[in-house]
Length: 464
Image (tube, rainbow, N blue to C red; front, top):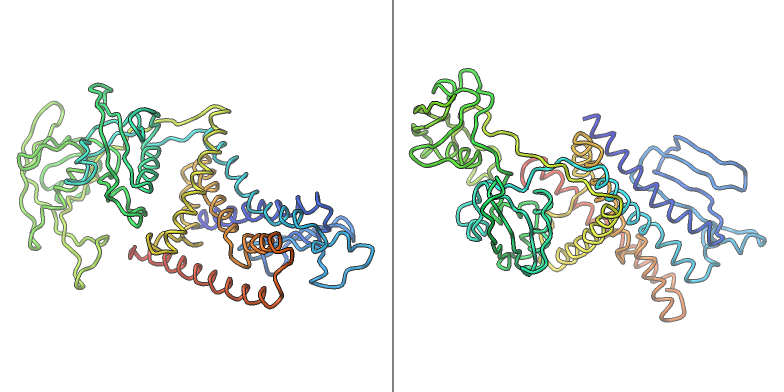
């Protein structure tokens, strides 16, 4: 819990500081006097000012944002000798540059962070697939348990290497948004038996692109052999004679290709609230044994409740499967930087598309996330290692940059919208219209924050 809170505060602190530094640095370069540079709101925890005429740097107790306060005649009297340094006296292009610098700083930071994550390298699951969901898009494409996806192509001509399972999932997400086709080159786990598959995602709707997309495509966890790990004392597995290290060959004469199939067979052993006896064939120290296994009836707490009743499933109280095979994904200086630029661009475009489709009802509002989800992911990424945390930080930095460029009053994008109006008409919006737009923008932001917070709570309670 402490790690999650600290990671969350560090994430917000870094991203807010970089955002505000973008505004500050360009303002100073344009000759604007900056009165205060604040990270956070509320009571001041730390203050530094080198002189009475210098910028005051402060750190406040609530790190949920920040601001750069500039000299401005609209906010108070400005001495005549300093009017040239007031923000409102600057040319349209200078004001535009100062306002746009904050979001752009976040996007530049994302490029650097993604590049750094690629330079450090991450241990990721190898793109070896578990058995796809029956009758799913993946199964119809011809994917089988143990298939190693080696490369992908949008057209069957321009092939690109698949570095890891995360890499493959990202390309599937991109193809699903295009409602297109993804050509795949696969082989067996040993690298033999190359063949080409066609994963047709055109039947998916935009609203299908969410956190459950891989399940809808039919892809689950990476390949894991059907080998038992720790066996709980007194549980169904131990009573049946199963031991850690046993490799399951078949259940009720049906071959078991991987751990995901075995888990499904165990779960499906319960019918009408009763568990049936299963006949398992296992390998133990080069011997084949046949055992009768009766799973325990359990309630599936992760399943959506129907009519107030959760479905019953089978459990054997033993760890099933071995850790997936991992690969170290690392790139050189130039490749890492190039990937940082491309990933930042792709995430930015994806964010804009998803926001647009949520606006017109083509995508679910469940895709909006708030501070609780960010805090949870921040804590998880820190525990996984520096490269993972840098990648997470980059993702949130992109989101912050894109969000602030939205044409909503109270955001940087809203001010840029005013400047576009000024550039086209030759005059600034009237104070009356500015007040109306501010109220409307505030209402939209409050609505977005409410939906995001609701989604956070719903995820924590298992409703999403």
